[in-house]
Amino acid sequence: MPTATPDSAFTKGLEGVVATESAVCTVFGDEGRLVYRGYDIHDLADHSTFEETAYLLLNGDLPTRAQLKSFTAQIKASQKLDRVVLRIIKDAPAGANPMHVLRTAVSAAVFVDPDRGDDSRAAEYRKAVRLIAQLPTMLGAFQRLRSGQKPLTPRRGLSLAANTLYLLTGEIPETEVVRAFDVALILHADHELNASTFAARVIAATLADVHGAVTGAIAALAGPLHGGANTEAMKMLLDIKTPDRAESWVRERLARKERIMAFGHRVYRTEDPRASHLRRMSEELGRKFGQSHWFGIQRIIEDVVKREKGLYCNVDFYSATLYYVMGIPLDLYTPIFVASRVSGWCAHVLEQHADNRLIRPRAEYVGPLNRRWTPLRKRG
Ligand SMILES: CC(C)(COP(=O)(O)OP(=O)(O)OC[C@H]1O[C@@H](n2cnc3c(N)ncnc32)[C@H](O)[C@@H]1OP(=O)(O)O)[C@@H](O)C(=O)NCCC(=O)NCCS
Image (cartoon, rainbow, N blue to C red; front, top):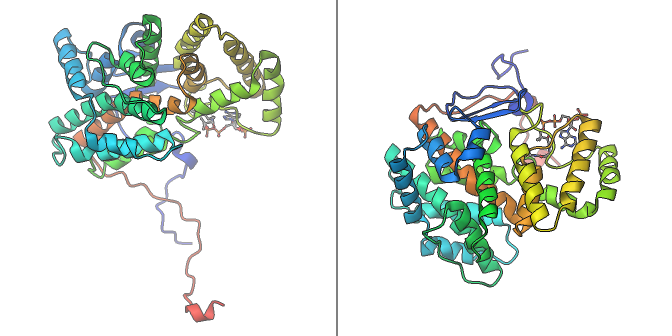
């Protein structure tokens, strides 16, 4: 029978399909290896900073001392929010989902971006740096306003990681906490062609602007099968409460064919390399803040899910407890993911625009054909 669709294999969820060339980042699923621009994630997590990593993703190379100084200065110069954006955050109704607020604020930021309407590469790069600079301020403003407090002004002397925590809590955190948060931002900065990055590239490939691509990417990241899994994982741990309940809790869910959040991955067939850093930091900070029981519960869950389903935890499992022991509200875990991943999204948008082709796949049509139209009066 003739079909409207070309004769090529259909793969549900595009699993295993190579949809673009990219020099930003790659994932070796069997080995559990993650590489940004040629650098192993373990080296970046051990030695780098988020600012340096964001520069690397956007520019392709690690910065020289002078380049890093200038990049950091650009971030610091762009951190303050325009009142138009602040007003949008202020006007969010009580109980608004922070991911909805964030994507609305990012979308609105283009109204007041000095480079709006300019789609040259230099202008897009500057827009990207502004978004990286402003996302923590948006997050901080949202959190302070909903707790009845005035938004804080970013402090010029602080790193992006320290500023994010300061803007959220009003306190300058200890060095150990800042370093753990900085490493978490490094680990979340990019991950090849994940759903939100693909969404950003699809939008960018129509030659739409950076703000549009990032807005769409935030919407994609919000889902519980993607970035939303970290919040869901913490809800699970809060429900389990104590290590002695962990095994039976997980077994019951698995028996009902339910998913255990923050486990499994489309690409990794072994441990997610980001999880090892987050596990160590989560254990250390849990101990420091007298909350080691979460780690105890998590190790039991890991054992059971590995034994029963052969699945490993992903980036969202230990980031959840890391943020929890830092005192960050549950619904801000995915927005924090945004504050980091915006660097990767923007690197992909710039890469897409540098060598663009509209992304327009086909669907295998499984609906009816050749139906006869009948007038409304005859349809009953
Ligand atoms: C990430 C995820 C969407 C990848 O899914 P996928 O590649 O489409 O894998 P599938 O949905 O085809 O799952 C394959 C098998 O593993 C099981 N599985 C996958 N993730 C699971 C989980 N978290 N808990 C329990 N079982 C899981 C599926 O039920 C399926 O089992 P079956 O073959 O017996 O039916 C999936 O692992 C998941 O939903 N994880 C939980 C959400 C999450 O942590 N997301 C963040 C990802 S970084």
